[in-house]
Image 1 (cartoon, helix red, strand yellow):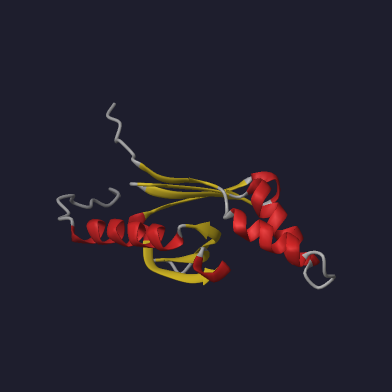
Image 2 (cartoon, rainbow, N blue to C red):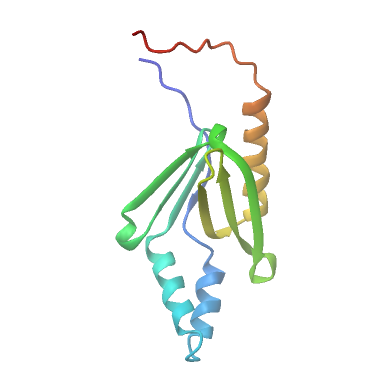
Length: 135
């Protein structure tokens, strides 16, 4: 059995600045829902970005796990937050589904990394032949 090496680019949770800003906003009644959302993200949301895939663990108690390989991604959209210190990223997949990465630290660096991997996958020659199922 051959194992393929994965290089880790980023592993961790959402930006700490997002939590701090939302806690400060939580002192107002209007900002309270945002504070609760930031606390839930800080506790249970985890990102893992490697040279082969992007993994997101989140949801209630961190039970929702999603993995995407770079060949499935058709578009990357980003929005800066916190004066550009962190940002939100949406990965649009080839089947039309979307994967959101909220409060991602170093999001510009991660976006560049993902785009490089997408370009490497699309420019690599494919020597594999596709075979169907025999009837």
